[in-house]
Length: 270
Image 1 (tube, rainbow, N blue to C red):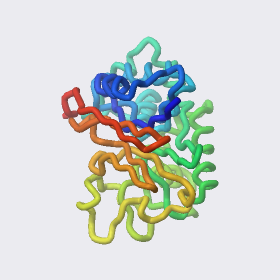
Image 2: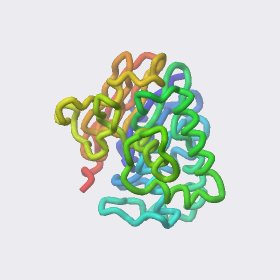
Image 3: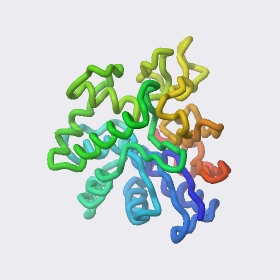
Image 4: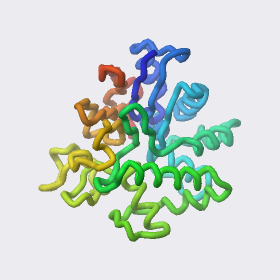
């Protein structure tokens, strides 16, 4: 048995198939940890969703910002964006089943010394904070009022402050779990920044460099940051290697931190 963390697939099914062949993935015994953004901008989001759903408990999936955008589109509370490639999912005969499956995915996964999240966490959050925020949102997403909850997530994320309430609190928390990359030394996320760490404003640092409390005894497994690239250290396993932009798709074997990657075969997203 082996466990692999795989970076943002974003509908790049053909590249994923090559990566699975490279690692010799055996769905009878192996497990996959998927860091979110299964869909959008790549050409085969529907195929990726069906594949992940059909893996059952062989795949652990956390939600990313593009997955939440798909849910918002399905709920009718968000408009299509210029580079969206979600129409095949929204028109599929099994659309409702797929959307229901996606709604049941968690925002974070904690096991065996790892914390998997799509983007990151605030430096002051404890593990109990992170898990509590995630459970709260997961319950709302799975409940009868889920469309209204998704609507509350849309809009620019404010800086995190413990006193925030309502929609601002929702967006501030999700601003870390599914969007953060760089932060100020005080922990405020630079939500408009999506470049490489070396391109950030003076004084800004990657979120994980602030030694988040929730990661005191855990390794962060995350994606979301194509310009950061795949990187493995004793503290982080970063998996996004910009497949949808013409880069590569990466898998990291969690048991020994071995890295496997295949070049993207899909055309870069326009």
